[in-house]
Image (tube, rainbow, N blue to C red; front, side):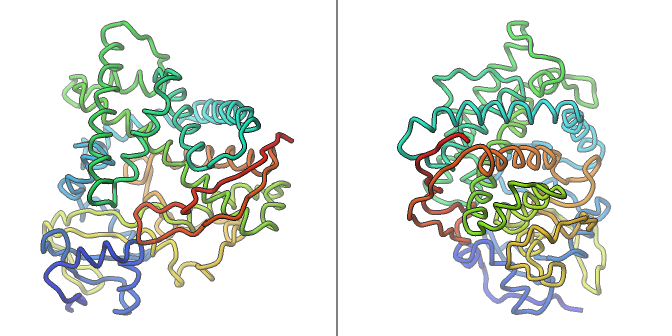
Length: 415
């Protein structure tokens, strides 16, 4: 059976013009969860979406990650040859390193750090006429990330480190100046972390043994040799950068409370773990990652379609989280849909799908959830503030998006 095919020699411009809706739009027009297109210089690409598509996408016997992430993404968002690009035993070994940092004790430490950093920030907010929540949240997340990871962060460098880590995130779907800012930020950030790791290895810094700085500094490859300095820096940034990225979810969470004041009241009482439901719905409803890529490991058939070795395949993340076959009224913000939720790890995939320990699902998903819960609790229960008239629209063409005004609040007072 032939895969539905989009016309055109290179449809990259359409992707840039449609953003998060590029794959969902074609899944609708073709009435198919699979179609073929050409992107990135006429390269053949198969796009898939939905629960069954996610299940096959995370089958490591059928797909590999090596060679799937474009260099422009590795040189900005991910770093070159990081854990996201590995396969087989090499990936399992590196993933084990990340999972070792996600113990209940360390997650408890993270929530304590998060609470403390929000308290410090809010004391400062009370002295300000207005606060741009997204910008302020990024600085909070940078402080949280560095403290939890054991990375020294001087007050005078907070703004620069926040700016650089944020630029790496902001560049993943960009072309032009935004992309080049991300590349420069990646270079500066890796140099910063390399210097710190070198200090650890020389005995000039003594991080606690349960921190990411210690783990990355002393991690050995399968051959028993330490990660080289550059690769250790890449992986440590794969701890710091995603925590800074949570500022987007926090801002969207504030937007959800503003647009749905009746839900904010439920969040304040937090009956039946409503905060957990609310956080999950923020992650489902609002845009974060548009899609993920992998390459076919060897020829196989799926649902009557032929996949050939080496073909790039994109999994529709945003569309799967808004799939009407999987979610009732997917265009509505309804946290209650997650009450007692026992859904498949392939139907709800804001940070990837499948298994944590051996698959490519994000190791930091628990980190995201817990930091969001603490952060949104502060916004709902610990402070009062006003939201002045502003442009809170966000554009699904921009990758990644954020409300245009970045969510301005005024007259912040602690309760």
